[in-house]
Length: 142
Image (spheres, rainbow, N blue to C red):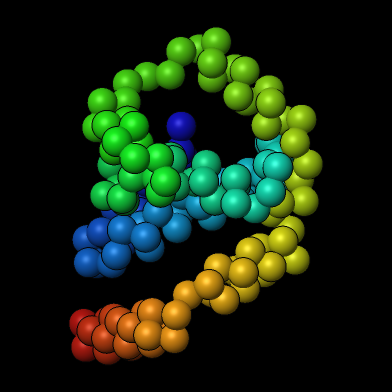
């Protein structure tokens, strides 16, 4: 269950008209913090991010379903109810056994570089233009 403060920050992002990925970033950040605090671990940085995105989806952030999962993931986001206590405990216990290195600055940096490298020049350019528009809009609102 995400913390109230995280949900509030995500709602604020939504009110400001920010993208769903930005709203989801709040949940990912919370997850990274949990790993750093030693609450649990993650096999790798990708898993830590995936856990955060999953929490965001359950909290109602309009993110697309998981990639490469087909219809299963699409239906999962619609009908997902409560997870059984037994399953929840089991996954929590498994995460506790994982290393904490996934949330290190080095691991996060490596993950960001890997993902950025896979994006096309046009993709990066589009993102930069959108960010500039957002900054311009925020400046005029102050």
